[in-house]
Length: 259
Image (cartoon, rainbow, N blue to C red):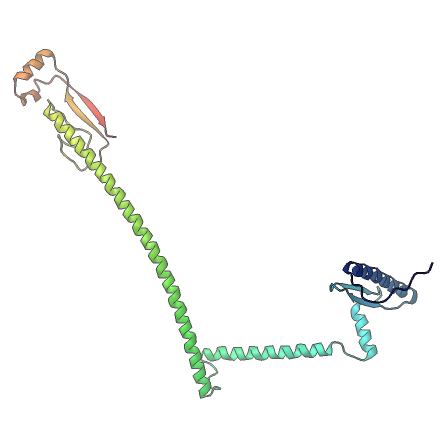
């Protein structure tokens, strides 16, 4: 049964259009390959789909450049002349711009000034003044930022110093309180039959202060306990005589830890 004639018009459905394009493209490339083999033809096909995707076919016996060169030679046209002229014109403009910039740089450095007229010199001076002002503004801004940063660092260091001073004052008060407590203890022991002697290195005598400001351990040398008769005799004599060698039998060393 013969197939019906297909009406040639744009396929509205996107999916159907892509399917038809793929089928017919493959068929066209297949026919071009057959024509290349059967007839020794040189064929090149470039195709862009509706999605701008490129598909190409070229005969295996020739390259694209050879094919286009043969086309230009046969037809007598130059496909690249217009593009080459546009590229040459663009290159010329770039060279002129580069030359102008180099001249301007030399003029800003004080060279090539003889070529300038009075108006151009005045304009150059104004440009230099405005550039110098922008440089000054930027310099002062950077300097201000650096000063502010150093001020913040200085404030932090001063705060750390104040904290250390406060901590030192607190510790010094604790040491003074401990020393006062030790002095009171010595005086108390001296007033109650003392004869005590602080030998820890922080005090000399009862309540006396030496150069050591923070003793941690002290020792007190006290008389050894006397017998009953000796205690009775001591109660009848002067307090000063109680510290003589005749009344002292022995002594021991008592230590106290300061927490």
